[in-house]
Image 1 (tube, rainbow, N blue to C red):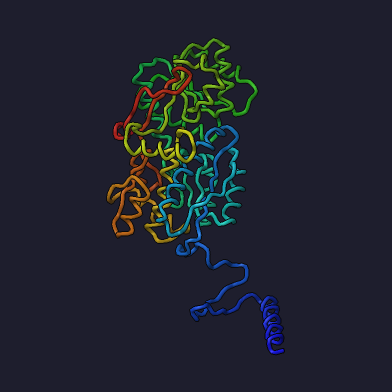
Image 2 (cartoon, helix red, strand yellow):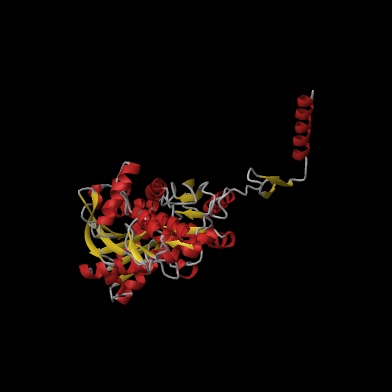
Length: 429
């Protein structure tokens, strides 16, 4: 009877507790009193000590004008996260991703970012320039770190550095590299043809300004609207200026229409594409026969013979089953920097990452992996992460200075034909 009464009393107490106001004091097995609040998980990663895991929002374009790049950079982030998790050195616990397609659309990107933040994301990785610029106020107000491997918008030169970072140089540097190659090749009549959207306008304007600084002869500077069924009218205007090279800063969908219509209109000169078109899909969709030997692109790059880059390729192959594409190394480095910032700060939330991200990118002992950096940080040493994409020394605007490769379509694929080290381009900036 006493046992039955005890069970009944215990059940009654449980019911009363469930019906309470939600604030209660409980006693742990060690006898320590702790206070919890209904609906709040106090064992999460906010304090950076639970080890339960940390969520990163992966907001990349899987469709739209830059849709090809989404999976490329996602693979780079995944390769880094798996390597980091395997070390067991991140006290926050394993990195997991909350993924979404930004559709290369700032409004869609904002909606998805808000959802990710509400689901506990402490950082959002992978936005393109237009999405990144749109997310800056949200990231700073919610104290969530933004990082991108390819957002070159010059608008971020003023907006970056506080919760806003990128492991790629600004389009200013892209423009300098493009202008230098055009000048080095001796082209006499240059057209600058730019799509009227943030990502492309930033690249096109940077190239035009750099060409002017080098005294190049820009015979026409023309913009075009995205998503048109035909560009024959505006193309006729561009071709009437008789350029021997066209610098095309366009999205993938619109540019394919332009490339094909230019061939139909008899254009026989060369192309220099912005990095948005530096994919195998561009070559396949436009036709290798049309682009063979005449299509070029300038992309942020690194010395692919370097040991650290080869190590990255091996990791990428092991995790994703394929070699990395453009900006994959930049994504890989961005993820490693976030994880190292967590170790350096001892915290797993946005403010902790923000406080240490620049610190771990330069100024200490050079390291080339998360594991190497995490062990030195645990010993109280400062580190300088030098990654697969290069030094990645973040400045106070949250940007880096990259090296660049010029590539040409040869045999139906992009082949490196020129390499410009970062220090060579810095002399021109």
